[in-house]
Every structure is written in C-alpha cells, then in structure tokens.
Length: 137
Image 1 (cartoon, helix red, strand yellow):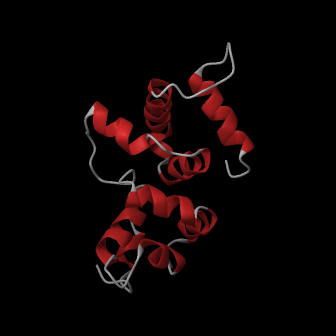
Image 2 (cartoon, rainbow, N blue to C red):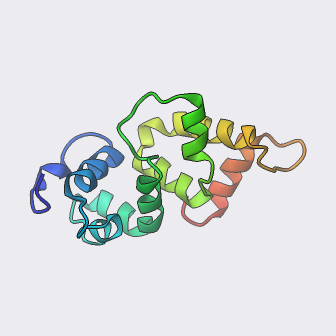
C-alpha cells in the first residue's frame, strides 16, 4: 500500500484502517511518528490521529495495535503492562466497537499487576475515572 494510495481510508474500525496504513508504509526512513504526522485519511480518523499521535505511536510500538486477535494471557499482560490512561483513551477511540473488550483486558491486566486504586472502588471503575479525567476521553 503506497503512502499516496487512498485505499487505506476505507472499511473497518478506525484502528484497523490506521494499522494498515502504518504497517504498509513503515520503513527505516518512515518512522511511526512521521507517518502519523503526515496521515491524510478520513477526517474523523485524522482528528483522532492528531489528538492522540504520541499515544498511537506508542501503542503501535508496544504491539497493542495489532491484527493478532488471540494472544496468550502472559502476552496480554506484557503488552498492556505499561499502558497509560491516555493510551487507553486512544485505544478506545480507535476501536469503538471493541471498547468493552479493551476495557476488560486493560483492567484485568492492571489489576493482576496490583495497580493501585481507591478502597471500595473496583480497578475497572478507577480506570474509567482516569479515562474521563484525562481531558482526552
């Protein structure tokens, strides 16, 4: 897929479209951040890329944004071990249909790591609270 080819703008969830674009165009001379800075896809996705550029780049580099639908529990923990609230917001925006799935994976992973949260509040509620307070969600 050529960087000037607009076929990467059609079909799928925003994250799938963006992954296809980055994956098809990444090279030694085209880093993820550079590709995202120059992204010229659909307006709604371009807006997400502009808003979450750094977070999306990190998610791509951490193999969180990836077409691998089923990974082991230990691989999930490794991939999501250092995810931030802003990265989670970006992930939810890129995969709106799968938000519940991502929230479950993230909350389970963070809770298994012993991620701190307020007494009497579930780990998932803490994540939702962070997500709404980060100014991006």
